[in-house]
Image 1: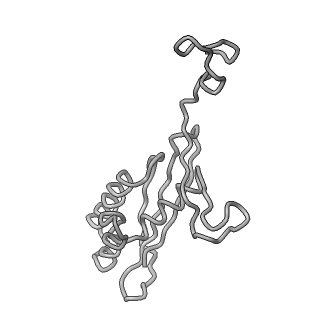
Image 2 (image 1 turned 30 degrees about the horizontal axis):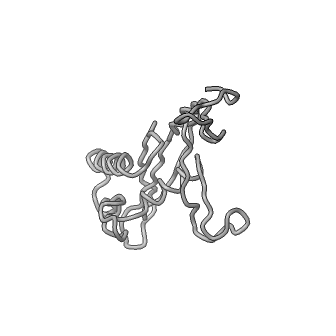
Image 3 (image 1 turned 180 degrees about the vertical axis):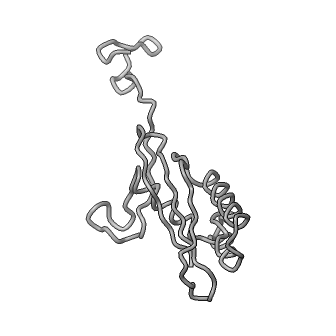
Amino acid sequence: MAANQEVNVYGSSAPTYFVEGPRSKKREVFGLGFPLGKDTKEGGYFNKTSGIKMTRNSVRQLLMTQRGERVMLPDYGCDLRKFLFAPLDETTFSSIKEEIRSSFYNYIVGAKIVKLSVFPTGDTGPAGGNSLQIILTLKLDAEDAQLFDVEAKIA
């Protein structure tokens, strides 16, 4: 309905805030900005983010969290550290990718994986195992053809 038309609600004119205009099909998703309290200029201790910045932070947090580590969400995270002492072969890399994909589609909203790459860095981690570099190329559902990368190093 146009804003200048009147709407009758049980015989009386409705206030203008009841009259709805066309709605956008795109919906913006907001989340907390991490780390908490870092940027006190924009929103204080619990500032909000959206778009690429929010998705990048959420994916990095998902990749770096072990399952069972988060309170009230025991299935949240990826068990990537269990692969650090595994042999670096095609079977291990496909298991890592499957672990990331299943966690991603359960906990990340509004983005799709375009490309997923896992590389050994050649460095030795603090516990003496391998270290892995994970690069995800993502596309937001709300954006038009905008791709971005998220990188995480598991050591």
